Amino acid sequence: MLRTRLDLDRIHAARRVINPVFLNTPMYRCDALGSQLGCTVSVKLETANPVRSFKGRGTELVTSLLTEQGRTAVVCASAGNLGQALSWSGRRRGLDVTVVASRQAPVAKLNRIRALGAELELVDGDFEMARERAVTVARQRDIRLLEDSLDIETCEGAATIGLELAETPVDTVLIALGGGAMATGVGYVLKTLTPGVEVICVQPMGAPAMTRSFHERRVITTESADTIADGVAGRYPIPEVLDDLLAVADDAVLVHESSIVAGMQMLLEHTGLVVEPSAALGVAAVLEDRDRFAGRHVVSVICGSNVDLDAYHRWVGRSEPE
Ligand SMILES: Cc1ncc(COP(=O)(O)O)c(C=O)c1O
Image (cartoon, rainbow, N blue to C red):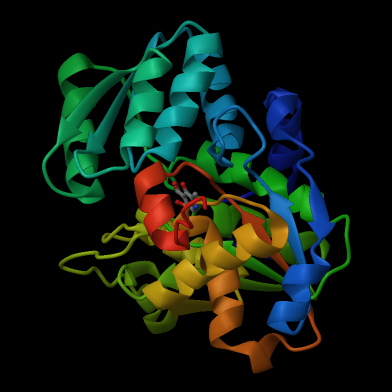
């Protein structure tokens, strides 16, 4: 029996609340990518939805509960994708959504949040500064603060990916690790339904706090985060989430920025997928340790595709038309 904050019945119930546009996402084998990486590779595509990331699964759940409770407003801190998803789910339910984000967040993410009608407050500094400010906004306005990965609905929403993954026999699932909602949610479902499947979390070396915490079995914070994978660039792991992660993950690994870029290039070249850096972490992990994955069937969750075009072109290399 796994001791985590998650519960399988609640995760099944979540599926009935989440807009079907986020559910039953495509999963398929990519032989061209697999032959480059020396293993069987499948992708689970969490980008073919209106917010182009998996975060809509959690925000659907959160906003439907808020509506049931008669709440009318919510604020969250976001690196961009949670804010966009909350704006989308909140707009459909007539909620006032405020998103606090770093001024350094990708412009495409910030623009989408505004376009969805949310109030966007920008702060100097990184995601952790946005988290601090969101707490103040919630207190001042007396509105609900949504805390990604700490609020169980964000984990339960992401966990529904696990229900879908569990339908296909595979050896290893690679999950980008930020605050941990996705890794703890998906990991819990896989370890409950298919305990033989290996759950490996991946973070950039430039933002290693949660991975270090996992290995040391206690919260380790970092002074700074420096990575192109903006979706996973936290510095202050949440103790409750770390406890859950320790119960469900087999390993957490760190990858170099150059491997993330190579992963994005390979996903474009061999699968035709435009992904944001966080979504290339899984491929980066295989690139850095081919022997570990050789001959295995590996699934990488392609968790987001919100990129600034200029940055994306810089990373994947723009070829000029002749
Ligand atoms: C594209 C993408 N990948 C991975 C993550 C990390 O997910 P989590 O915070 O649930 O660990 C995020 C978080 O926003 C994200 O946007």
